[in-house]
Length: 452
Ligand code: PHE
Ligand code: NA
Image (tube, rainbow, N blue to C red; front, side, top):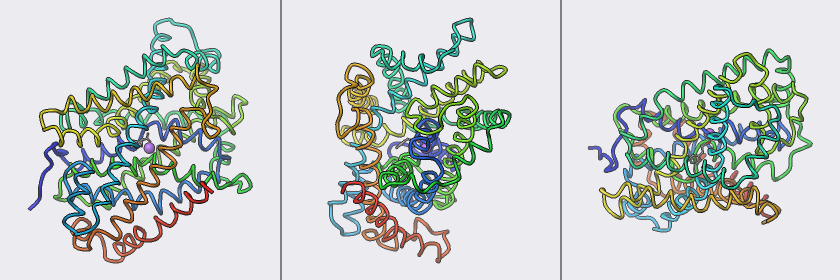
């Protein structure tokens, strides 16, 4: 006997993989991973990040999917039900609240950055019909950031696109967006990597990405790598739990889909690195300390000088906008599903609009922190970086830590085994100890080290 979700169900296993990959692959891989690598000294950061994905990210990804698939409702109500059924504390419901707050915070700046990519798509579209070339990418980027109205416009447009899909619901909205566009993005990245090879700087770029220089590592590096691992796999805020709630039971192995999603996400991030750093190096830029502007100030240099570069630029920023879109809908869905359960099934539109409106308003803080309020510092960060830090580096790992403990200690073995039925006994036992001890300990050490 298997329940279905009132919010709808993915029509197939493949649709779930596409949607979960659509959620995972986004600005985190192509915008954030390269610049975090750049700011944290290259190879050593990448190695720690890969360790976090393998030991913490992938196992928690499986935990989120299985909790969702067992519960079949929005995170808060799923946790409430599971806590009741297995006779444990209702305190676990806090995981759902951490998730909803983190989701609203992340969506607020995510939409602002996605707005930049929309703006760049538009710039290349204009170039294609005779508009001015981007001759000085640094100046073009600063001009965008210094204009609050322009930023607000694109932020609003992107948020509207996000609401539109989520308001339509699982089958009609979420599925349609991911079917063709994700594979296209993958192919385009491969083409940019090939271009990178022609620059003669691929070797140096690979060395920067993969040869660890441990001397640049600090406690903060570990926190950044852990935060990035959670962010990139959409973990710790119940997104994957929510997507798991719409996942059919028949013939779907949580272990396998988890690996597929984690592997795709990791390859896209590494490909993005291999596409971007050769360009950075070949134009004599410093691969270290690129900051959030990295892809916007480096890639346009390549697009202006390669054959058909304008078309590539248009495709790249267009597809990146779509990748961001399939992620932002997954940032909005958990809180929306919760409101739908509260106000009734007919209120999906209003629910999505309420949450998105709140996120949009919060996003104005990020917009202003790029210009009028750029002098404001909280804990040594501008407002946007501060929100990013609280949500990505603290709330997501904290949410993930609680999810691991919940799956490892609170849920009984029967429920776990029922959801992971195809997993060989030895692997299951290993996974369970990762949830009980290894993942929580690693996250805790990293969090504590960073705070004290
Ligand atoms: N994983 C997405 C990315 O890499 C961001 C995201 C985080 C989406 C958390 C949903 C939940 O861009
Ligand atoms: Na990602």
